[in-house]
Length: 195
Image (cartoon, rainbow, N blue to C red):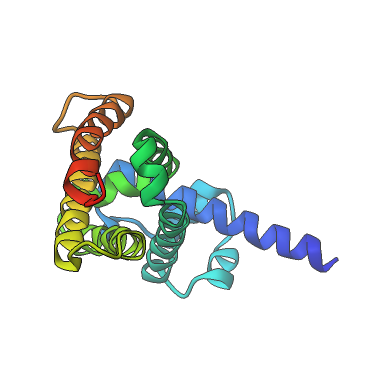
């Protein structure tokens, strides 16, 4: 019985989050979305919403935490060695993460007050990548490695954000190919002192 209750709880949370993301994608303004709108869209009752979230702000924080956790999992798979050999694998993994969370990322990219959240996500990317580079390339200047990971993080994430905003007319596959080409030409020569 406990497993069924747990599964129902997880299912109802997913339905609430999905309903909210669909609503925010059409209204583009959190303040115009009510709990009633969310539960009607999710085909649930208000009690179910309040059994999981105190208010809509708590729901938004939970969605952001989910995205952050998912992003961390993608970034943990990043390895300077495998990236050097085949950067397209990482870019594909990253773009899959973007697609899996497209509604939320589009809201962030197009929202008026989301710059702080986008900056936070970019810092997470930079933190993971710089720490992996520092551990892998021990004989290279740490400031140079940090600058490289900052360039990598901001440039890569910026292209995906531009795609989400619709300001560039490229597919995600095109972006992945472009990034792969850029990093195939620049990373090995600019980082490794052994080559």
